[in-house]
Length: 116
Image (cartoon, rainbow, N blue to C red):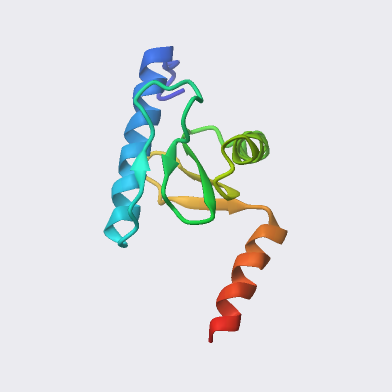
């Protein structure tokens, strides 16, 4: 909902796709060879693929539902077998945030700590 207007299905899909493209460009700017999924794949492809060891669930929403989104990311991470589930999300006029299960984040952090 934005200014009392309910987003229609197509508007919501367009907003989601725009978010996927924006996030992909952001990650590409850091040198990652990531690719957004197909425009309207209805879950047939990951939102974004190519970030090593991470399954990305991308959300652009005003109403935050991190536990629902993480459940989706967990299911899809198993289905696609592309890494640890992580939800990348942002609201309008807000920065991108990332949510992961704490044990998954600790696993990644421990790996980088060992390299130091």
